[in-house]
Image 1 (spheres, rainbow, N blue to C red):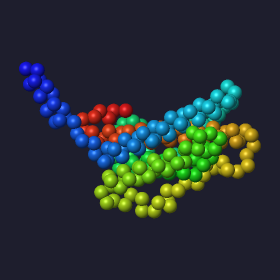
Image 2 (cartoon, rainbow, N blue to C red):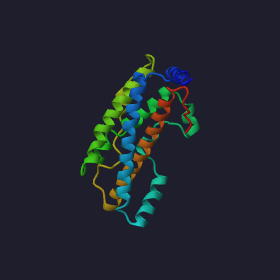
Image 3 (tube, one colour):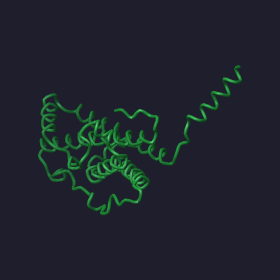
Image 4 (cartoon, helix red, strand yellow):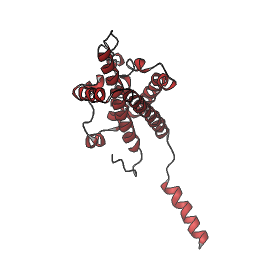
Length: 204
């Protein structure tokens, strides 16, 4: 009887388990990379907040809630329900645009520490990985006919000579937006990856 149970278990495992495809492997790598960037963004933002006075934090948070991130022009799902209804290709496209929107601003986040210097290279690796996933899922469609059109200008006047208060606000805005956008990309890639597993529950 024990041998029969063991045999049935092995057969059942062989039927239910699916081989890992190249697409799933690429998705796993992309999700892992954006998770690393999101955690890094959270740490940088928390470290910066810890240097502020309570009143400074309150004022900056108030300003940020009224302001917009540089990437907000990119049309993306407004809530988790729309995210779950979006196609894999749409989620990949939005993720690509969000990552690329940080190509210039990320240079201002570099320097001063090893983690900060990882940002631009990690974003470049993530961008390349997402592009590979897009090509694998677009079925010949020309999703980015003019890649130069996707380039965004740097964050407002961040690179200009600013006063102390304005510089503080810009740094807060830059770190807060970076954290916000990496959270978006992590969510979109996680949902898209989940779609490859029909039996998985992709509820956010």
